[in-house]
Length: 245
Image 1: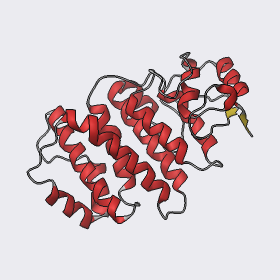
Image 2: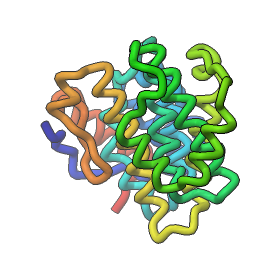
Image 3: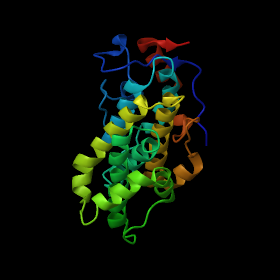
Image 4: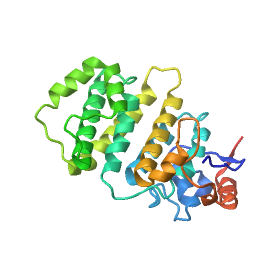
């Protein structure tokens, strides 16, 4: 199901804003739509996913940032305590970054992919060493980094709790900054795709039926029932924060 977006798009900007009259970032706009107190850390979205959205918002160019607004409704209500969420969000970030970031960051991203997959195999009861096809494809694009990461991680145990607390947020930060600085034709498109893929994976885990029905990709804003977005509140938020032309 594809959400029908209101015609007006908000003028998103970098950083934190005291109130709507000062502007809005991705998550601040989400907090307003969700009916929460104005904040870039609203409770309506999983903390790591919200952190990813803030980073993507801040590292996207001014010209491309308005295109992120279509994804805002899909993060509202997307939260939970399932420890697999952090691993999946980190995986999306690392897989997107690995093929394009600088060499020193490629090593870190390859380690992050293998660590996140290790955590997921433990949490999901899958055989040790079992990799998601997307992870295998990403690693195959940078074989030297993948080989080094496998050697580095041999015998090292990564606990789900430790990964969730330390490795996952570090992976997300390194990945977004690495993609933003990568020598690629359109880093903005890669950043948007990274965020959209993470939202899609969270939907698939938290709301399997909706995820199958909604399928988010880098060019489509879906993942939420169109009725969940109040057009009047959206228009009011745009009026308060500014409208992108």
